Length: 480
Image 1 (cartoon, helix red, strand yellow):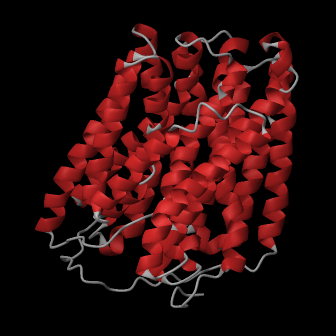
Image 2: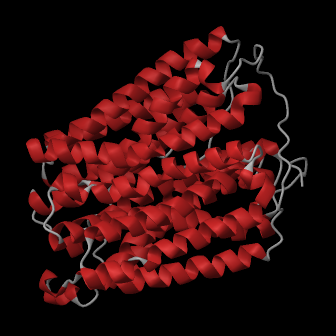
């Protein structure tokens, strides 16, 4: 199957999208587990961030295992197994990880809980290696990045409802009675159900019409590229881009994973009251990515301009709807519609240039964190959650800039970038340590430094690429 086809194959894309949904559902649910584990196991803030470390470091370990096996067998593992088999295997690995929650809860073992999360994410690593190029292959190459954006939006639908569902499963009987009714054993059932869902989707995908060995044809464009170098690590845009992916995923994850502790300790929220705000943070990424996905549905410029204003508010409406179904008070969230306007204006100001977009959104991320650190109450909460809006476009910008000009080394460079997802765990751990030494409120300086590097990368990579004869004039979109 080739991307020379003229239309997106939605019949194949929709079942694939379920995998993207799972990634988001579990990743955001970790932010609910962190305060639960912190109380149940009497952890410090830094120790509680081991949840993020165990989850995100698995992506790096999974990538290394994949590269090692491919090297030892002198052939690409996924090409040998086939895309559908590889996806199914990844889902089975993740399902096995969910099974560990049962004995971990019975034994009250924090290390076993972390092991379960690690194995779940290990399966996700293989799934992500397969699913991203497969999404590109299900239609014309010209709209491949938009399909990734749409997949990212589906991922963030999972991040939006994940905290709500897991919170209800854990606190279902405690919402009225208070947190005294909370038990670590309450995590068993939701994760066993999740494991069953993994297995069902694995069977479904195995027998679906998805292409087993898709052919991804990269068409030429107006970019002139110098002769390929001897390896991906010879390109400075990739080396600096690896650090950029590391700190980007780091600030995206650590902002959310430390938010529950801030709201509990500094603002007096109960653990079971935090889920809607975690949901809003991850919904913010969905809002930004739905905005960037409009080109996958139409090539009419006037309609695209209209949809760029409609899409973010439709996504915001989804957030409000799922929280209304969960019977949460929506009144604190309506004002957030004004902050979404900032996202739309920033997107317009970037004019689709990935370096300019990265610079603008990194600057807004710094501003949001500084406002959050210098204020208290709900203003600080809105400021911290708006970081999700300004993170929403960064993955495709960084990824595109980092692999530009790599030629035959692009696949190798992509593997190195996927490894750097571990920043989600390590930056969260670093912020946890800073919070223990100072305060959670002030620990967000870690995120400011992350965005500062991203702004530097946006400025520096533009010159690096110009020296190689590479210029961007197109709108680049996509999603992690």
